[in-house]
Image 1: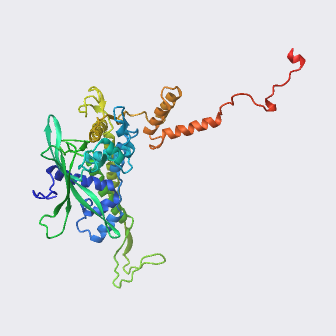
Image 2: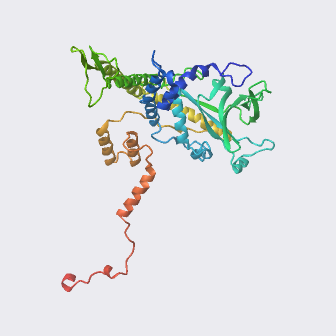
Length: 488
């Protein structure tokens, strides 16, 4: 983005500062093909290396994507159990939870994607939007219910929101203006054309939110490249956007928890490329000759051939790599892989609780992990989104619970033994037992406990059918007659 006071595409300083890190992290997360497409940006071309040789080296280099694996591991912890909407969440919002974005995403799926993006890039946003209403008449909540008008959530990635301004009012950080890009599809004949437009939201003089939409034009009749194509006012007194910070320095600034790991992963990518290149050289020994010439270029090397040297003192021999550089390269890759593995674990280690998202979350004497801190901040952000949703509907907000008990379970077979013993003694419920198995990766994360319970109940019914109540008219059910001795 360029600094142009007249253009709605002008970005803020925070965005310009954060964008290079986001681009790097996203490229690594996208994997081998994205790094290959980036070319020399992440895999420099060696001095004197030909373009063909570089392209060949780039084409065979593959990424061990520890960055993505670590992120998936982090995200899997808080979402090993579903997000719980507590009893104070209005029923109208609970009804929206299975399709919170009107695109079919449940609140759990939506929240997981939001948390993942924030953990990857330091922060991410959610806009609580509302369909445009007909303000020419007085509307009621019943009108909204009949017409299906309802608030819905939109995930705004950090790369999309390129400008924001805020002000602290009454001890609360209030947004004054945001601008972000959004993708729009438009039908053109038999094709669908997709392009980006800019949405601007700001607090107007009346204290409510105004919206403007800009689209880019190449028509030379317009002096400005971005033309306003739509505008409307929203019936809400604050910009309905919430930011989740996994790490925050100040407004729209922070360091991604993955940035250092992405740098290690890029170093591993580069070392892998060099290692593959040296292996290619080492696997092909060079035939050398001393004391001989091949002036006629008739020397042929291969099977069923013999070599001749006119000089009696001449000899043929192979020049082979010593292997020292190969071992050094292998050691470097091993060490980088070890460092990347330890990096992900550091975020799960317990440490003194010097800083928490909320005073109520943990006792100050208790230890916590960086991932737990981020999870508690996410829980606060999710509750703010619930409040904004309720605000649109004229309701009061509510609270949620995101799983954050990341205490390290016993390892391996000992863990299973303890769990099985606890279940056998009825110290824990079946649901708690299965949730612990999920958390320990013994059973799949998407294992449906309720559905499995229903199947188990059906199996038990088949094994132990209920006895038939009352008598039967069958002859086999008649009591046997006793003889005189038995009767006596």
